[in-house]
Length: 218
Image (cartoon, rainbow, N blue to C red; front, top):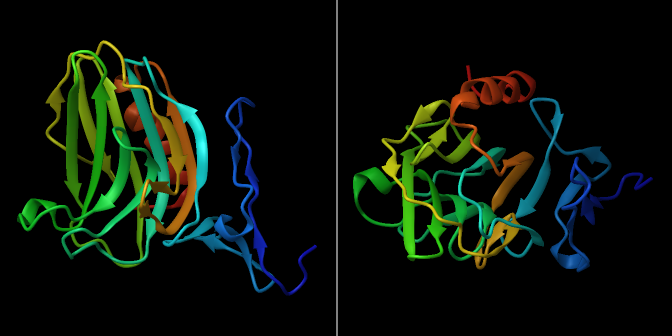
């Protein structure tokens, strides 16, 4: 119906029907049709975020959760090589998953970073996986998972070492998609799958299904 114009997303529907992602401000709505053509990556639809102000606000809240798993298929236009470069797939202040360069340390140059935070006692759990020379634009299947007392982050099948956790409940925080406060994604999101239970034993199966459909990595 947009003809040769652009089409944007005002509502991204949650498949269980309770956490639809809504953006009412026209200038902050990400694109799905560019000049009359559907935005795609590997022939599959992709929502394009402009890296400036596009996102969805207050989509869901992980507050009080212990075991959690987040799986996403996304892209970022270029490897974050400058300290402070960040593009968030989803998150807020204390819980997030983002492409980042947060320091001059080699292990942080071009990383997928994930963090969760226990509410009481307050404790951040943070892990990173380097992007490892992935070709640009970077197309990634990112996972962050807390289950069986361990928090890990994965990028295209490569897993972080993991950190032991003693989660009594994730700190309450409304989650944005496409940003984390001022860390806006200059790229695309194709899928975001969230579990509030232990999926530590199902990671390879879930990632395998998503990778087969979106053709993220070989």
